[in-house]
Image: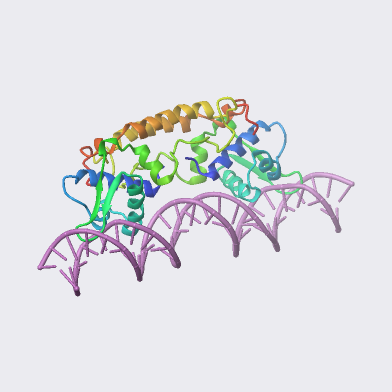
Length: 136
Length: 136
DNA sequence: CATAAATTGGACAATATTGTCCAAATAACC
DNA sequence: GGTTATTTGGACAATATTGTCCAATTTATG
């Protein structure tokens, strides 16, 4: 359902939020702990930096730090990484589909999209820090 | 959300169901009407044939015909085409995620997956034939 | 039986996503 | 000031998805 890139982004942010008491955290540590390819994760962190969810500094003792953890929602991350929001558009891909001119699944899909949007835009990274036995 | 292949598959099946009174319907007519690339749609129809949702005959007056329209659910189509069911697996891609060992979003995601499964496995092609002003 | 209209299947091409490598820039520290 | 530990950015590679082309086969029909 989610792209790999988004999964790595969310895991990175959870890891950063969990270790936010410490100073900058290097890429190598993040990717080791969330079990992701390092160079690819680097690209993803760059996107999170330009989305202002994360700040970074180069050099020794450099790395990444999450900012505004309480305000970062899953949906924001998906939009920042994929450029769209998972629940956008028609289920069948019809560009002209709308409530006025619905495709056959339009109204049932609208309901589903509402649930999806609730899921994506009510869960913040902050909330996830203490949940789950999973080691991230 | 859905792959292009699945979108073409569902549209093809809706088109076939709408014209099920007539005999075999050729690929050219289907792809023209659902506005899909013909050769690619051909591959997809082949998969629907091996999934026994559609029968086909070669040669003049040949084409495709949907069978058991009332029994074909959206989820079945997605499984036949993509080989998996959209709601499978962990949101974050963790293979060891489960209710016993949940990832941070596990329980909220389970709820969403239930809605998705309801959407996918309660809607049959049959139901969609008369719904929607959209021309398919 | 020849021709036309169709599916089938294999090989290939284009594009998107995922992933890797490396040089350059930068910051801390001895 | 040199060395080490980092991010950044660009080019490239691998894989998956989407899409195309064409020859072979099959069926109906005149």
